[in-house]
Length: 142
Image (cartoon, rainbow, N blue to C red; front, side):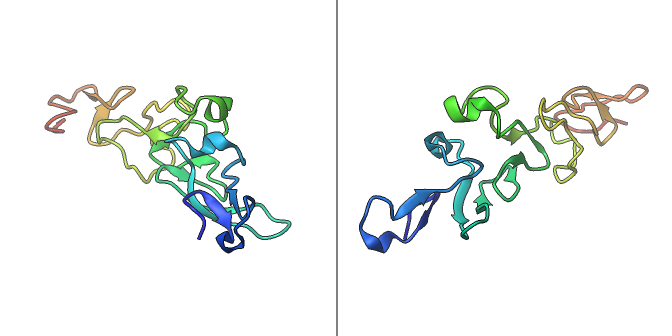
């Protein structure tokens, strides 16, 4: 069996038995801490189907999942996987968005767009106009 992030038949005992999953591209930097996939299925003449890490979606893990932001196809992913904005990270909206809503936060910047619970602000950190309370800790805007 090939290791995490690789595909192939490990029983041949040659260096090319296990190949890096192209999720989204076959680059060694895909295997850094911010890797895209646990495994992939490759069929001849077709792009791989990847089993994405949490926070990533798409056949080749090429997009951030709802409730996450970044750009997995950004050049930073391949040269510096920790470059700001180049890997998918959870939107920081203080628990005041629906994490399953694909439009709850901007998929590139992470700015919160659909704050819930009568909250507002780039991070859903304040109560809406005419509401008062604690938007972050008690989440009791009323």
